[in-house]
Length: 85
Image 1 (spheres, rainbow, N blue to C red):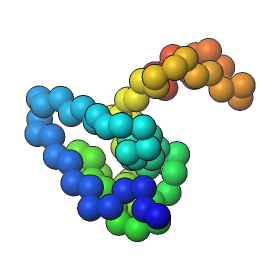
Image 2: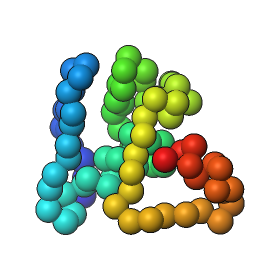
Image 3: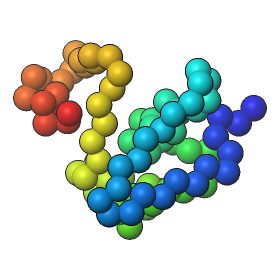
Image 4: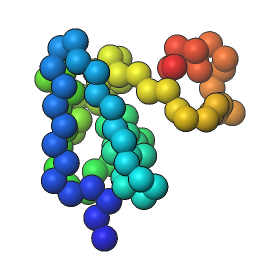
């Protein structure tokens, strides 16, 4: 079973993109792949002309994600959490 198949999203400069869907639609999987927490089994993505497959460090410098729930990681300091969010 494929969580994501044929996904294409595009947002131009100054536009806001929102991802909506029912439980199990693949929203979390998509965000996990775009943030580098999961590796895609196939395909690639481009964020601000940076390829997910080659430029993850550059993407992480410009991409911000706010989780639905408060998530704190034991191995990160408070300063690291603030910088990440």
